[in-house]
Structures are given as C-alpha cells and as structure tokens.
Length: 158
Image 1 (cartoon, rainbow, N blue to C red):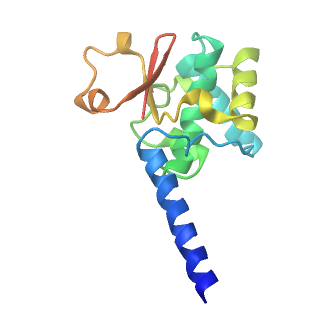
Image 2: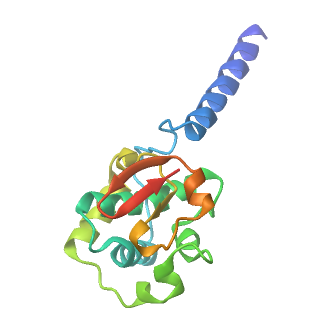
C-alpha cells in the first residue's frame, strides 16, 4: 500500500514538472522521439516550411517545422500536423494560398526530415514565429510572449 502511494506521488510530481518545464521554458516540447507522419501530411509540412521559410537559413527552416510539431504536443492547438497547419488564421501562406503553389527545395525537405527525426531543441520550445519586417507593428499578443530565438528574419516565441 505504501509503495503504491509513493508511486502515485512520483507520477504526480513528474507530471507537474513536465507542465512547469513547458510553461517556463524547459524542454517539455523538445521531444527526442521521431514523429511519424503519413506522406500527405509530410508533404503539407514541407510546403508550409517552403512557403513560410524557404528563403530563410536552414536552421530557420528546421525551427519552423519544429514549431508545427511542438504545437501538436502543446495542448493549446490541434493534435495533428494537418490540423495545426490548416487552422484558420494561423499561417499567412495558408490564408493566401501560397502553400499550394510552392515546391519544396532539397533544403526544406532535409529540414523537415531533421525536425521529424532528431532532437527538437533547435526550435527552443517555440510555438510561434513571425517576420517583423512583414508586420507594420507586432501585435500585443506577440509582444507579450517571451522570445526564444531569432533565426534569419524570423522571431520565435513561446
């Protein structure tokens, strides 16, 4: 009986620690587990990365893919890559249709594969990204979030 009580307490503490890490910048979203996607979802992710970060450095392409994967695990967004990408109002390239006109480069395909199969810490736990030069003024929402990393023209936030 006492062992069961101790195990329940340990489980509760681990869950609390994971939640605290995700809130306060730890690595709860830096999954090291490979992510398996069906082919159509992988192609959609590649197209999004191409449309949003095709002209960015390779590290920025990986980080954009990681943002999508982090969102699926965050509890704040849909749980599938497809639904995160297609969620209304989240990505300009989806809203304007650019995502459907872009052919991913070799670099983008490699970046997506890296995000899917390797440590996701390169995204620094980010759930958002934006290009300040494409915004007249960042919203209060973005300004309220901590910046995790800046890569190329993109600012990443969590």
